[in-house]
Image (cartoon, rainbow, N blue to C red; front, top):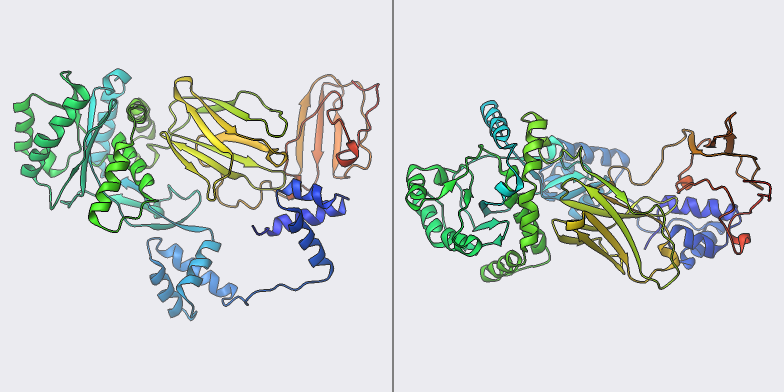
Length: 512
């Protein structure tokens, strides 16, 4: 694994501080041989190797403007426009330059295209349903058709940007598969050929929906939910529901983002990413296998999130881009601030959360390095880092509103800062984890009886005690990337054992 420019700078800094190659490798999380190669290569003045870059900075700026102009272009479209501007290059070079700029090819977030009248009806509907309990929503039976769209170039953290969104509009369309879910689980899939009109939709209801409802509800009553597609809202379809004595939930137009089954389709598509079917039969088999793997617990969690979605619509004041982004009442806290273990032991790091969450992201951060994504739990579906981190697993205990990160066999290199987040936290510039050159001030509260200077301390670090001796400040002037770390204040020495390889301890016995 190659080292970044920041890691090389950290190696140089730690070497100047007198650290050994082994200490440096453990500090930045790379092999000792990589540290040795960097130090020996720099001492002999080794020149940069590799093929000369075929594009200039000016040409790269032109490519950035081309991408920003239209995020939905393919690599070939980008290459043609770059060629027209005077830069002759290959598709592979275009791909590398776009990735260097931080763009990744992603499926766009789909947001409903609503006019003012639809927005008002959407808000009215949410206001009417805001007092529904979770038990009322558990009676809801969701139905939908699954499909997949184009891709978009975007950077990390730009998921909700208007230029990266794909507006969904209602047109007569061909569908591939029909599915239904409830809090009790999913029903059988139905693959569709051709367009869906009122007559064909009623056949789906007769031969697929009714058996699914019988499987999931038995003889109990339920409320059916579907959107306002022309086939769904046709008079003959309404008569069909009346004849069969089925209650249909009124639903606002273009509000697929409120439908929990859309999240279920998203989970199914995630599971299909690794499958590469070559024929239509293989594709159908892969979809059926992925759909069958959906557990009742996952469906129950999606349904019970409806009150939060209703509250978000009202809070957002009809703005759809904020529907699923309102997390004001959600919070997550660790069981304990620190955990200690010896090598080969199993370690469990646990957090409690409040509110209704749909995703839990675990990260690890070493001193002087950006956060590293470890694993994600999204409605019960696990997504690991690429490449996956060995020995790491996640256990989401929904009934206890807690999540565990388990390290099967701890190593010294696992010593780091770990944290769990309710949404992705690594956005934009991940190269620096602190601002510079601003000053940093850290404060601790307690009773201080004596102040002692650190032997051979960094002149940028200073400690100040207030007049009442109840607060002590650690001030760092002109912060550096290598200052990224966890800082704490102690009332007695906490570094024991062989202190020659760590930090010198100048504190005497008179210090409290």
